[in-house]
Length: 187
Image (cartoon, rainbow, N blue to C red):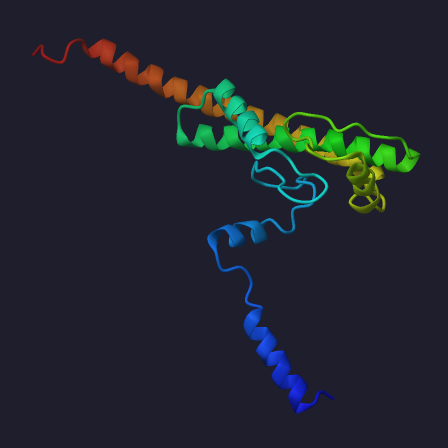
């Protein structure tokens, strides 16, 4: 049983343990659970741990995917961002697979460069990542993750194509109405 002095000391210490107070500290602590970004729903860079990514590189990748898709409505933009996130997660999966293989075979891994890939990591950190983050039956589950992501990408691309087709049909219908009515200033 705790003494009165211990209880009082715990209460005093608890007053100091209030978590982050600044916006930067809160933003950082919000990403504490991000280990490898494989299950991330939003396309953000992994900022801490063995799978740290360059935030600017990730953002450039997302921007390039969105620009290539050329969304023109809010819904199209949302789906384009979803697709970019899925491609980013699949890119991370490739790196995780190489780390899992290296861990299982004790091979050395070279740090790749590109969106969804770790950067600024030394060989020691990569080897440690293989033993810490990729433990258990992760290697056996990789094909399932890849299949799931590939299906999600296919579904998202189909949704995006349907959105674009619907928008184009509406635009064509509106344009057809305007052309059939002729100039607005005629009576």
